[in-house]
Image: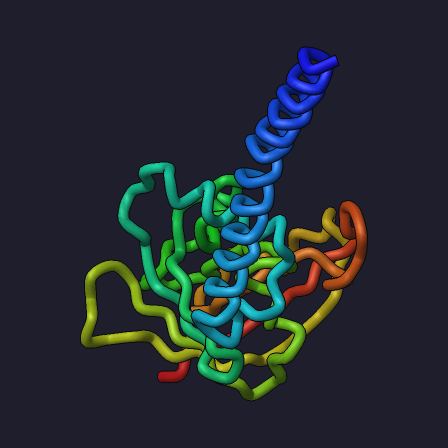
Length: 198
């Protein structure tokens, strides 16, 4: 009978060890993930509304080497400061906001098109209004941010690319998906258009 008791005790100990090997890393990993999300949300007002999945995508994008940003975009009203990277692919928009290819380059005359995720950096666009200021600081020119004033806010279909047409004036067009809280692929685009303050 003594050997049965020893085998039983050994199996209980082995089971507890296996359970511990699973539970400790799982609980620790979950706690660290929640802590990382909380720290990210605490960094600025614009990060507080991010979805947890978008935060993880951003953190993964930080592991990828990108060329230097073309500009830095700031919207003081919503506490946003974000790099403008070239392109509008998913990885680029996970890391920052993207300059839409085919539109004027930041700092150049024309219509500069910029895209961002509605559940990421551009979540706060829902809180801007006509007359608000947007700053764009092209390249390494630290002393001279360009100031734009929001002229119009509109909602368009994805096929309506007229908002990105070339212009002879210096304009800035911010584009994100709409509605902001839509689950799945959003059917429309939220467009903020601003003009350069002379």
